Image (cartoon, rainbow, N blue to C red; front, side):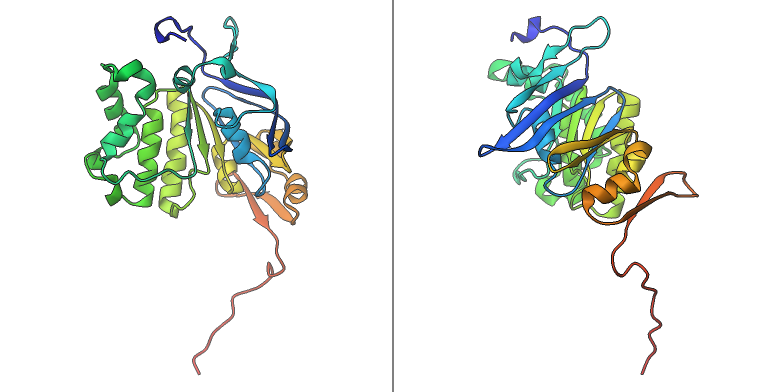
Length: 286
């Protein structure tokens, strides 16, 4: 598709009836979900439930055996078949932050962020007049302008995660997909990254789809939650309607209690193991 003649596509991504197979075995079954501008949708579920596979399929890194993937479709705008777009055109509308990425030691933070401009450079690396301003904006959004010229091999894990997020933002897409973005981050960086994701939805009107393992983080961050189990969508809706004791206990195979934090009003979960009644023991010196 010629970039100059590409139709304007409203920024929303919808997958319908998606089935994905590995080696002839279906691992995601007839899954459907819609990512809405200005909202965060969290995919949760046990290991092996199909969360990351479904997200990768939405990002076109995995081909569905059946199903459709469309961009847009707001009133007055025709939805576009996302599977028929060129890779470059698709990358102008959807960005993916994967679980792990290589660390290019010889490059600076700014160099890596500039990689995100590749869908806008055209063929043969043509000039990108808006690129420098966009990169600076992404550095500011992620709070990383102060380390922009440092080598990425000198950055902490939290800073490195922000490098790749800034690179995704430099694509200037309306859809952002994140696969377990808080993995390997300490508590501070987890909170800061989740705050940034929420700001991107609220202030930039980005449609966000994020895979999370922490149910409390999903409850605090997301507008909608999609609960998967054994490759199927078990429930989809608001956090309060999906993150219930009955649904979670059934999917995770362990008793999970759900209540409301009286200080924040947010849902909180607690998995009950055999030592849940254990109290702190008083240790005395001999």
